[in-house]
Image (cartoon, rainbow, N blue to C red; front, side, top):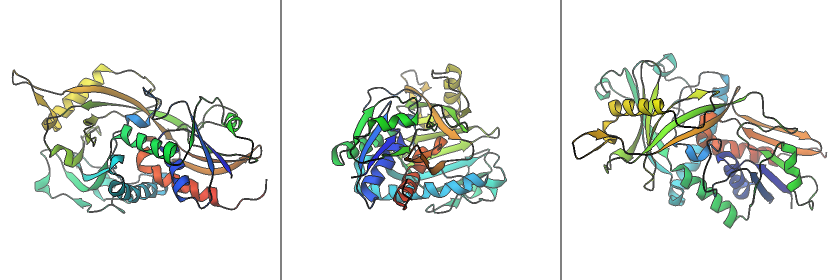
Length: 358
């Protein structure tokens, strides 16, 4: 049986492994190598996937790369419709996505390509439906999920249903992955799902960079209306404030920051306070009231994660190095969950293409 080694156990690596198990026409022995995986007791900021919101928030494409990549999110959207029904334990739920804009740019005003394509019940809100100070708003059907639960769901499916082997190891180069091959099936196929694009001889893809995000996990009042939507608000200065319910009693994510090339792992108190101030102004329904009648956010945890972005968008490509087939699938930035099944199925397509004898 052919052998595959997937490097990286974030949302892309796990989704790719499951897509191969479920959808590839050939059978493979799969090993997944990573420094961290969903069974780890604690998650550092560099293991980004557990810190995600996560929800689907489409947006109009700003350049050729976003135009190329947005269909990946639609593939995931259709897969999640299926999983929400067949596997409720995955935590995927469909709710309303609502967005408000104080000063939308031309791409938003004209509903440019990439925003509404393939999105159910997308509509521009009427003026009388907008909050004070907003010029535009939209709503559409979207999904939310509990990121740690969904990662555990993928992990358990792979480990206990499909017998995928997990190895905890931090590789210094992609070529090190080959040493974990069984040696029984000739050259191993290596799939590179490391967020920053680990290179064959070491180092990372020079086009990759981190985008730091800080959010708050809060315990909101028990109002069922809160969990029926995920709401995003863009202020005149371009700052985004959003909240995302986490299904299966996972609290609410209130965010967030977006800081390219910033890898500070700790909480920035001033950012926490700004998130609270903006949240109190825009989403007061998420605040509790103490015995003195004062409103406050019940903050359970401050989250910090590094979105693995890439200049030029997602890299999905095949190469042949030292006799090995290498397939790349990385660089999704803040769209890891949204692109996950799109990238995974693209990798399966590459995997199953006939190749010349090496």
